[in-house]
Picture 1 (cartoon, one colour):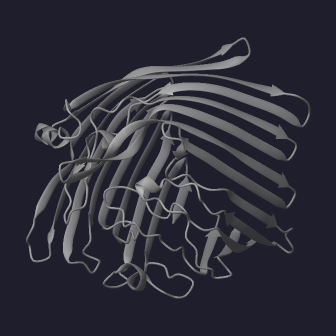
Picture 2 (spheres, one colour; picture 1 turned 45 degrees about the vertical axis):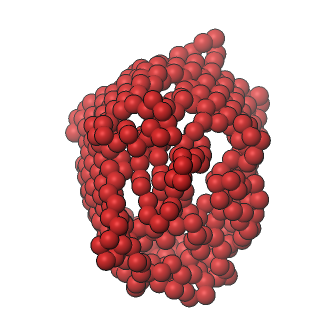
Picture 3 (cartoon, helix red, strand yellow; picture 1 turned 90 degrees about the vertical axis):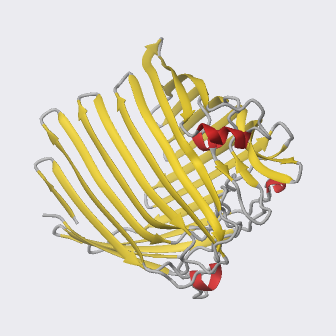
Amino acid sequence: MLLDKYSQRVSLRYIQGLPFKIADDRTFKDLYGYKENKNFKFGEASLNGIISDIKYTGSLMYSENVSFPYLQMDEIKSVVYNSSISYHDYKLYFNYTDHLMNNNLRISNMFMETDAKNLTVGFVSDFAEVYYRNWNAQNKMNMINGTMPITNHMLPDINLYSANLFKKLDLYGFDLSGKIGFSYFNIEDKGVVDFYKPIHSGANNNRVFPLIGISLSKSEQLGNTLSLNGMIDFASEAPEAEALFINVKRMMGKPYWSGNPNLSQPFRSTLRTNLTLSNISLDLYGSYILNYVYLTSVQVGMQKYQTYGNVNALILGFNLQFNYKFASSKISYTYGENRSNNQPLIEILPLHVSNSINFPRIYGIGFSIKHTYENAQKRTDKTLLEYSSGAWNRIDFGMTYNTNGFSISMDAENILNHNYSKHLSYVRDPFASGMRVIEPGLSYRINFRYNY
């Protein structure tokens, strides 16, 4: 539901349902070891508006029993609060997330649970940003009979204080942008530092990283239908908090998961260009990253660890788009290579193609058809147990009808009811399931809307 009047907007949304079925009608219970196909719930309420020179936003999101088959745990409950208030170019913002995950929805001989909280408070203007962020996550696991208990302060009350200044100006027809600042990390639970020291000697409970960025761009109109844009960018950002300080002891001989407080700071140089000619647009980009944060395996005595290190990385890619009257196409491809060992980078999307046709409206009715193709991905990092994936195709169909402020739309996805999985169908973290998740079979969605 959406109400919008006098520059004030209220929206409410609620969803309840069962996890999807795949093309051959199998459910999450059949595929991924769930006890049952548990109903999930999702609700969202938001309020935003403008009063004179002041803009404000506020929202609350709540979810319950959301299944994550690509992980070993599911979202039992999550609450997210967001708010902001702005005056001209000055904005204060706030976010708080309370997130509980466990494996109670599944058949298992062990119990796992993570209770995570995240707080962000910040201020941003047209020349500066200052913010504070805190991560705190407690993890526990044990056998169902209560034996072999393990507790982890997985994200050990991590504080991040960050501030930066930025400026954009015109330099002889070029757009020059720059940023300078710092990020300071520290952890309140200093006792966990001993967890890192067997593989990262000299580990400490705090780090400081300078933030530096500079970019130079230029746009040229080379005729009525031809334009050329180019940008060169140099930036150095801090590693992610999880890569620095996560710590998880695991059961049954599985590698411990460890952050690396000694990580070097990544430095990225990027070249990007865009050529637009009438109905065709081509983006080309390339980045070389020194000290790219990357997964690595280490063993000390009999204990194995999965942790993070630094490598040099090369990422190249393109996006090609075509739009003409009722037809459109998009092709994208990314090439990633670990230049430290000349092996493929992990978790890189393969060639992706989408084609759409939107037929002319007849008596207010419009039809569309879309074809999506993802190529096989053979360039994988097998040292990190990343496996190749196969190619897949999907065809979707849509219909819309508009009259006198009333509109109805219907979308049918995967109309040929194929079983397929995307290359990045599971995430790689301490609790990844290691199995590919099959996408939904034939799915329908119907929307009604009335504007008054």
